[in-house]
Length: 225
Image 1 (cartoon, rainbow, N blue to C red):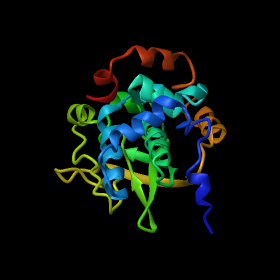
Image 2 (spheres, one colour):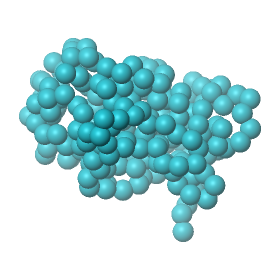
Image 3 (spheres, helix red, strand yellow):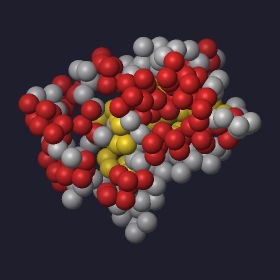
Image 4 (cartoon, helix red, strand yellow):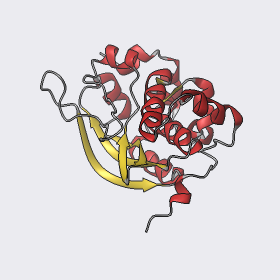
């Protein structure tokens, strides 16, 4: 039996008790009546208004994952954008959580692969909303500008009724999203687990000085060929 109260309450990361987060959530759904309409509006706002920025995915900096910080910065990575999306949902009464897994995005540049030291993106995250008696998956990672620069098409679209995740193939039939190990659904973010795996898999690439160099590069040079 699921404890839906865990998917509706604020936490350190899902901080809709922070006034700007709460107010923005209700601003986005203003004038909308159904849960479906509200969920769609929240998804597209986070997808397109919060720019994708993988350089902030550093689990040693806890505040990077807070919804209020992502909203203030107007940029984030897969997990932080999904936390913001799920936080908005909780604020307006939609049960929401985060689903974590390992992912290969076959369309990222060799520069990104060289930086990470692998083509596997460990602890990729997406939101899940409980709508009409089922959990729906929502991936708000790539905003329109990032999708255009990286040729990440088709973009992830959400109709309020079906899962919205990276497709296995792009518009030209090439490999796109490949989901690997499932790391479970979580009412709150297991940041210690993420940091432990990052130290194992990415230590020489992300948690050392190269990470600081990464922050100085613009999105185009980091993300795309």
